[in-house]
Length: 357
Figure 1 (cartoon, rainbow, N blue to C red):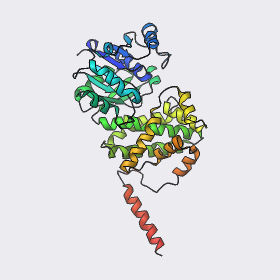
Figure 2: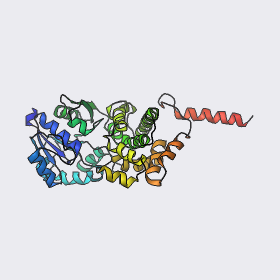
Figure 3: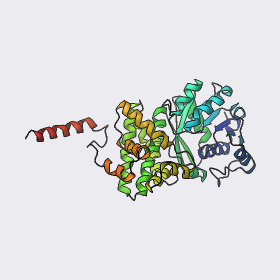
Figure 4: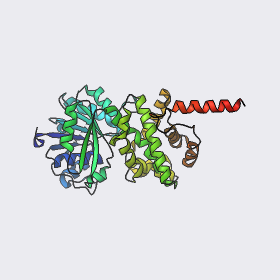
């Protein structure tokens, strides 16, 4: 199907959804972008600008914004759902009366539903029962995409049609779409890295150096892989864009919302002050408690996530968290090479031998 014959719907008026809507229009698709805010709809349609999230970005004039979700999704070959996790299910329920099983539904949201611990593609599956479901994740700072900086992302689905259609609709000279069949791993990578971006922001505000940031990111990757494998994902997925790629950019850039929340916390602000100053959703704040609860339930060792959870919700000072992390148990570096249990057994044996002398 030629792109000029394709209608694409984007649900959500945020920065990433807006950037993807404009890319699809640049590629020749007819694009309808749904959002609740009628003033923002008028601004996009009249000025071709999203003044709230991407004020300096010229949106392709072929993007039509609407507050009518039926108008947005009816006849769309591809529906991109770019809604925060807290409202994701509600919007999908609102749209599903006008959706058809032949349509492709793709989540761009990097979060976990609080009540169910479901990922967003699982919410799409549960609500619609459709076969053509996928996710997009990767090191994708929306402001850099808007500036047409060279960027890569991953579309993940078990369905080949979903993967190829997204690649055709969104690939362009500055935005490259790679494919994966590990939807669960790609989506977990996108959700989990938000936790560690907050920790990296705190470390930067506390004046910690590049050694510290490198340690945080690599140990974060170990935790992410450990948790994802326990959830049935492929650990190799975390070597790609949705794992280490997304982790690097989110833990290194002041453009990252989660990094900025962490930086504000490291400066001494309260969580409420940090989130209010951001003015946007930082999914990591919602994700850390959910992941820690699930990790305890599954007996998955996640000291970085647990430490951040104590800072966010138990009043522990960020610098105290950093100190206690260095006092944790001895462990292995890459667990898929040397299992943690082998290191623990060796230490227990050493301790037992010493006590017996």
